[in-house]
Image (cartoon, rainbow, N blue to C red; front, top):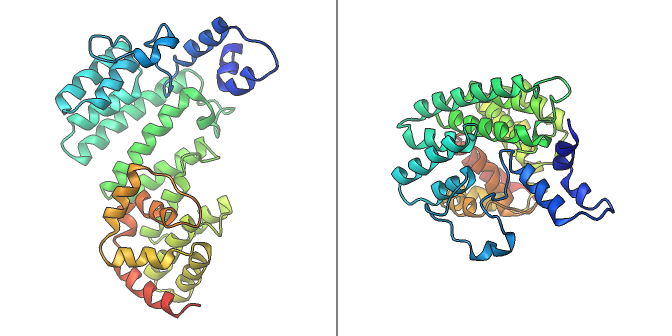
Length: 313
């Protein structure tokens, strides 16, 4: 990797390395950063001091980033599609634009999955040709700026596979993404253990638990309790339920919400600002929001678990 890329990947260290950096150097670094997908900087401003006075419109937009901003703000699919196509024309490697176009133009989950997989395959070939699939990079895809959009694209694919009931395919893609990004910055391990719980695949679920050594994490405990309930091993299910209760004091409150049919409203409110602290109700809502089709199908489990929780001290 060349020196400029080293700076980009270590921008915080670069700006705080004790040396004085001119405005020209910093601007050049930001311009370099803009070449990578996933940047949070807007390259449509020549004068950063005038940022607050800048009004982004179709007339003032000049970059792919600008047109994607317009697409995401658009109040109609027709206009969003127009802006996304413009962004893709300006930047043929803009994955975000391709995904938005696929979402708008697909009438079914299956059609969307097919289009997303084609984007995945194309991006995989491009990254492979550029050497990003070399052994030295495997396991570190999230730390490499150029491969982050690929990870996010696959995350989207996994969600759509789950929504379509294609759990085994979703599990395979999760496993592949965890191979590419061992630290799992996207939290795919939590989706994966839920999928294995749904599939009643005990060995694979326990493999995820062992691999990440999170035996006290509610994101692991709830799926495992559901898994053993589904398998008819109520003793093991109760064990993980007790651990869940001890890990998060809002467990009973969450189950009451599920039983009362209020869970989807809670998830909708949570997803507007998806942040949580540990040992809160929001932490538990986050667990279910990761895989609504999986955890909310086990209604009988929550009835049984509530009776167990009432007897626990």
